[in-house]
Length: 240
Image (cartoon, rainbow, N blue to C red):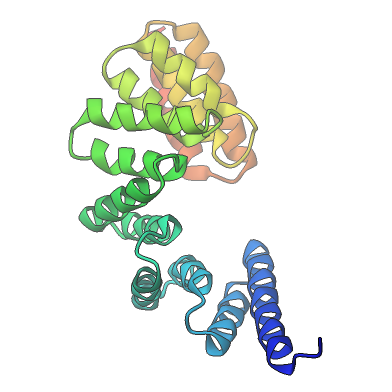
């Protein structure tokens, strides 16, 4: 039937959905100001569009506008207090700003509302580890990996705790799972793997891996990391 009112509602919904999709595409391309503008346009049409507020938390944070990001978070959780993505996005922003108490509360809220959220579990583990509660942090990393076995950062975080506990074989196993695929994170993960082999007494293996880590860091123009690896390589070769 011809229903002008329903057609108008559907047109509005389609417009908002289209704006969200377009904004997310721009965000993936790194066009953050344009992405924010489209999210704001969607909210002008529908201020109760929770997903737009959730998206803006991350976009504003990446734009260096923490006050607006926090305002977007408050708007999102006012509309949907159990929205795990809103809590997670805000937690990441707080962690990057070294607001660790706020980050811990927000990561916990994300986990409470989505117990299988591997990234939130890993984030909660990271801020928990900072308090010195290694066993609790390790348990959170294991929960993250149970939910998402391929979460490389959780393998790295768990490996770091195991290395500090001198459980070197277990730590090496975790670091090895974090290396692939080779990307911007891999040099740091290789560095941790090589350093753990050195601490375990496998000096030749450590040198081999650290040389690879240095090469990968240089290929990705990570000069400070490459310099740190080179210094450790020099120490190992002098000891030899």
